[in-house]
Length: 450
Length: 188
Image (cartoon, rainbow over all chains, first blue to last red):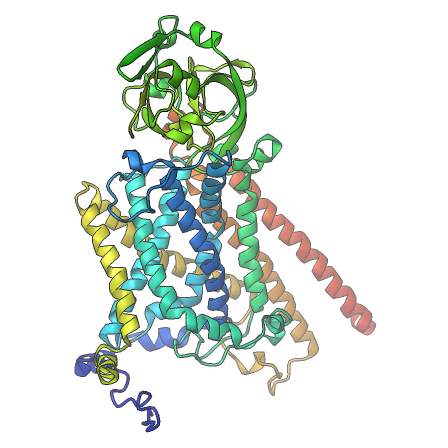
């Protein structure tokens, strides 16, 4: 029975909590579909309530921004200023353009590994958070005002967004393109829909999270065993069940269960970002596979056969064409091998989250630029022999050409590159996404302007 | 100004901040929708977006809730609030033995739930690998053949169940020892 509070006037609620048009909302409230009451009183878990929801919410509040930011950074790593990051046309939905650095060399390995790894690790937390608030979905009336309709709509975007991002991300990292749409477009724009809904949700719900977490010291909750676990006091959101059953686990137990799930996923995922025996711990991921032995025994992301590279293209007849400042220089592999060779130990990391470090030997890109007559290029456009792939060409920024470890690699781990690793020559640049380290290079155009 | 806010609150149902952040959220979504609408596969994307929610809320959640109910029924752990399950024993006064037996049943339930959740989680996350999807893409990418990870998933899941069972047996043995040493006459 809401009564007026003359002191504030604001708490006074003669509307019964309904917005305009009140008659509509009231009628909706009265016309309860059959079974609504059974559902409302049927929730049993004494664990459900704002406090448990807030614990999961807090974990996501810390981790999701990391996943979002590393995702945006990964887009930036593809140098979108050259129109080569996918999707190409994103308007103002991107970070400001900047030159992706070449140092530290493990930068992309870190950002992409974090993006994919964290994205997998938070899956149990997301599922637990959704479990904790699921009674809201079956609430009646679904809304009492336009405000609540809009908020519910934003929740659809929030929940749809996170599930869509998780599903497309998981499928992409495991090579299952069953969705039938372009992954980059879907995952990039899906991220923005989700992020917008997340920001709205955090702005609206953060005060509630803080109140819920402050309502009882975390230490007290951690010391409460199952037998002493009690339902929370009734909350305005109706998460606490009206007729709770006996507890079968404590709250700390529920949180530990979710944390354990995350740890298990982490243990089965991090291996794909490391070399050596650790890699094999990624037991259920494609990149935990043994890629073979020998100097060329490391991960391949596009085989020569799939790229349509014929042995004739890469035989003695192969020539590298360097362009720049109106000049064209043609080199065969012997000429390249006769030039000053530089060796660098650099990681190569893929958008799918896996990475590996190898020892590359070849000619510095800046030496080739000088040979082409453009000692200080603003960019370099690299073309592959490959004719069809999305990544058969890539443009490198000035800092990426100039880095002393940026190479046109001819050898790896002391042996010639294998056909699958880009023989006769491939690009390797510190901190550059793997697919931009063009394989089977045919042509490099050093440009004086971006 | 204050009066305008009060009117907004009464009519709209929330304050100006609420309206503002939600409008921002819908502006971004609308802009994305316009951008994506030109794609030939826009319909599929929408289907997957909404489908993900429907699949989670109306299939996955009811499914695991139902399985859990079945497990509880099988283990004989009550779901409903009952007088006999509260803090205090009811008038029918189940003895300490009943309470002990209930604790064992509950432990048994949790020792099934835990590995089942683990196995389910692994199946969901590594689904494409477990079912061997994307073998063609994988071959094109790596030049290697890929065998489905079904066996591996079964092995990890089996290990979870086994581990849980071992821990349960240890707990159960301990519980029995404690009970028997407390009440040697009961052993008969």
